[in-house]
Amino acid sequence: MDAFDPTPPEWTIKAIHAYEFCCPSCHSSSQEAEQVWLNRRSPVITEDRRRAWQEFYRCHCGRVWWAWSNQRPPTEFSTRDHDFDE
Image 1 (cartoon, one colour):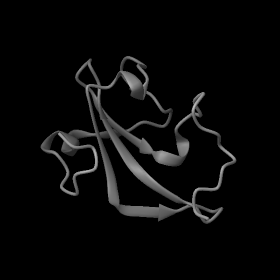
Image 2 (spheres, rainbow, N blue to C red):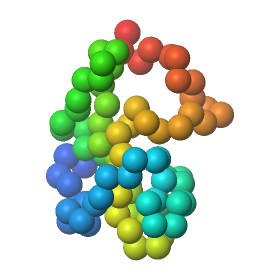
Image 3 (cartoon, rainbow, N blue to C red):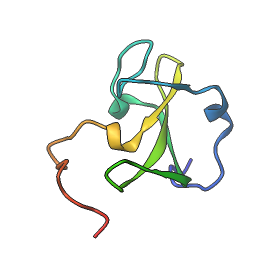
Image 4 (cartoon, rainbow, N blue to C red):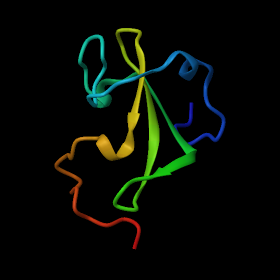
């Protein structure tokens, strides 16, 4: 399974929108997901003119959820104020 495959995997059909960037059922982080798929074919433009994509996660508890890429919490390897669109 390629997270960047342009064709969505079958399991994404049952995804629900998670308003916090974690599994809505068990609250596991995206880093604990068993499978990931990024919908890079349909970006949206945010109010600050940056692109955001849907990120789909299949959790170990069985729930499938998605959230916007710009809502992902920062990690030790990333910064929120770095402009990737330059």
